[in-house]
Structures are given as structure tokens and as C-alpha cells.
Length: 130
Image 1 (cartoon, rainbow, N blue to C red):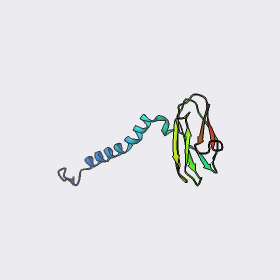
Image 2: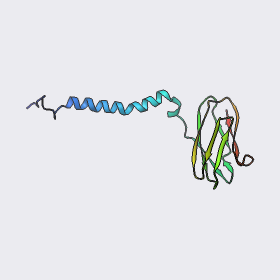
Image 3: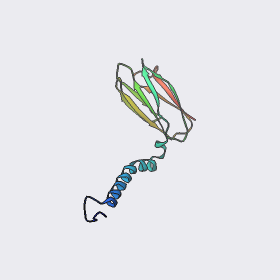
Image 4: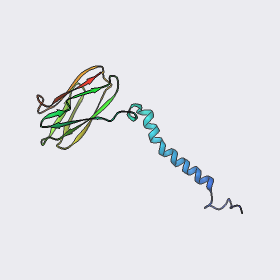
């Protein structure tokens, strides 16, 4: 026997349409991020720099010329610090145990320095753009 089409609980076509609409809405943020931020979706994982005993490890990063880049800085010091790089346009406070993200680029080939404001002679490093 064929189900009645006027039965509101038995509408397979309408249910499929709603499921399709929900799936489409779920895919929109990913499609939007690929369209607006094409380099972010395929970006390599960020490098991690650790600040310990007023020294950065590693103190030298190499990034590609003409592309955006991202790295993380984690403080293992016991005192508050400030990560700074005038050439990258960054100055961010850094509490003990905190991790900050630093975005840069696209940049021309060259060397761009960074340092910790209170200990600039020991806590310093370089981003090399090739």
C-alpha cells in the first residue's frame, strides 16, 4: 500500500531537502575560509619558539619570501616579558607560561630581528626571509 502524501510524518522528499540544506550550510564556512584566506588552509604548521632564561630557542627562523608566515612564542621564564620586532611590526606582552601567535609577511628577502624588551642583549633572534 502506498503511503499517503498528506501524512506530515511521512515526507521523505522534504526530509532529504532539509538534510541537504543542513549539509550545505555546514560546508559554507570551510568554503568561505578557502576563498578568503587561501594560504591559511594549506599553511605549514607554525614554528614554535621558546623563551627560557632570557634566551630564544631556536633563535633563527627561515620563512619563504612573498608569503605570509606564522610562528608561536612560548614563555618559560618566571617573569613577564615583551616580545618585540619593529621590523615585523610586532610588540606583544608575554606572561610566564603564555603562548602568543605572531603573523608576518609577505616580506622581501632579508633578515628581520626580534628580541625581548627587558633583555635585548641575550633574548634576541632573527627571521630570515628567502
